[in-house]
Image (tube, rainbow, N blue to C red):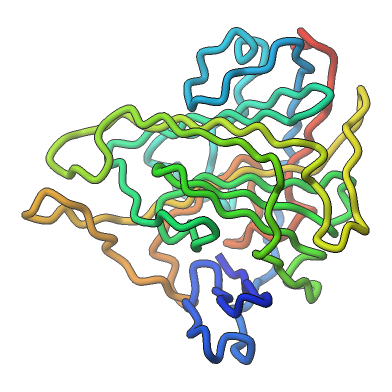
Amino acid sequence: MPRTYSGSIARPTVRSGLLALAAVALSLGGCSSGSPETVDVRLNYQAPRTSSAPVIDGHLDDVAWSDAPATETFIDIRGRDYPDPTWETHARMLWDDTHLYVGAWLEEPHLWGTLTERDAIIYHDHDFEVFLDPDGDGEAYFEIEINVLGTEFDLFLDRAYNQGGQADIEWNLEGLRTAVFADGTINDASDTDRGWGVEMAIPWAGLVSPNGAVATAPPSMGDVWRVNFSRVQWPLNHLASGEYARAAEVSCDVHEEDNWVWSPQGVINMDIPEMWGFVHFVEEGTP
């Protein structure tokens, strides 16, 4: 997806676009982010408060998750007029005084991951992504990505890229806890897997801008945030060696990857916060 990462580490990238050379990265232009088509979907989610925080182990089997409804099954990022995803994805949310809890299940017959360094460009693997805009103004928002190996990538954006925003990928969400459960064998093309589970405990206290000017207070009952979830899925070759290899290059011009989301964007670009869904923070046990 069109997204240019730039920051002091001189490792910017274009979302589903060029992997820029570090030496010249700051001088490169990004892919056009595009404008969303008309989509008549603005999804809403009732996130219940929990009195029993889930154990962050990648298994969505804690009692607390039974109170959290599943989101609608993810669809193509462009909207319902495009092909349905091949495999099912859904997410769940809970909250308490200290954390937002995110759980997700990604049906997946081919568990594959290559990136192990924190803040690597995780969407070059299959990944799951969380986008959080606490006040819903399209500015000062947060992103977390993870692959099946449990490798994390987090960043802060002062505003969307198409509004001149700059990503800070040196920023780390302090206190973030994540876990992945792989129901199958990772990087073994000789068998068929079932999928992977993701759990995240996102501390309210960690949702602070790099300079500390923007801090996120824990929500109050009835507050509404803009939130979205994304799954990037690449075509794979099954090698004679029993391994996988990505079957497509990262390109600005041709999107060989699939982009499946909770709330459709109308364009292959996650960084249009006004297209994200609405998460309502509600009482424990609220349906």
